[in-house]
Length: 394
Ligand code: GLV
Ligand code: MN
Ligand code: MN
Image (cartoon, rainbow, N blue to C red):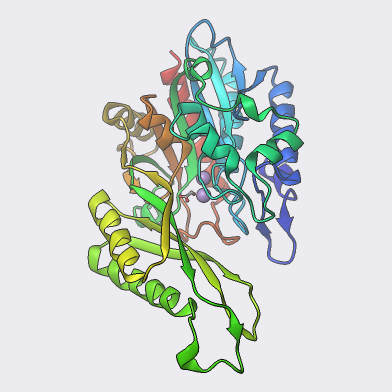
């Protein structure tokens, strides 16, 4: 299945993927998902927020066990972040059928919309809208780089923007959620283990810093006459690194927009996006406050904030034990925290018993074309997921 998806949204000059939510690539991926559901005789539903659900059994009678992930990507992302969880969900379902298992509860495969937030800036839009933590009015007004709002983009994709928002009817179908994901660090490689289970997701957020100055001629404006927003911007970037190291967190400026963007002009506006994460919420929020103060009058706005998620302990321990028991040594699978955000974290925060299965990433590199997982490890992930689903669906 990954091979079938390999060409969609691929930038041949880099081998990276560009799969923005609701782009042509995303629509093709959604069609692929529908096709996979149809091939297996699953009942396909698209909820009011564009999330896709393929059901084996009827979850309106009894909440089901759901597995899946997302198909959108960061810009120039890898092939595994998201798609591995979706294809593994279908593959695990196939494996259960091969084993002759008939689940005692409905089993669903989910594809969440716009997990990465590459286009509109807010991550996990589909699951945040579903659970009501993202206000639909705010979501509809988010704009992409072309100035199109989410409302425009949904309308163009044939969806009714008035439909979006908290969806209790859909939420009621989800009795439990298990998301398989490529690991985005080297924890499993270090422990020589192909598969692990998530302990917690670090608190994380994105903040926009707008540094305003005055655009002027690069050759004729004396240094003392300039109001150059690039200077406070540069100070904040360097300070972010220093403050993150001091506070034991991570902070990243991965996106910058310089306006008007002339090589021969002092800029008038520099907009920069800070992503900050860490084990302790206080440290992350203090870092942002420190940088906002240093930013010399920059307008700072929070674009998203996700508090810490501690996955349900009995559930994660049960998964680790089950996966371990089905493996060679029999020892429980490793349980690891992560600094990456996931729809499973949003559902967990909304009270849905949720868990994550990680598949080893030999280099730990992610959000990059170099992201990788070995085929044998992916197969071990599918087998682990099938074992877990069989148990949860009993
Ligand atoms: C999603 O992958 C995130 O952690 O930003
Ligand atoms: Mn990602
Ligand atoms: Mn992901």
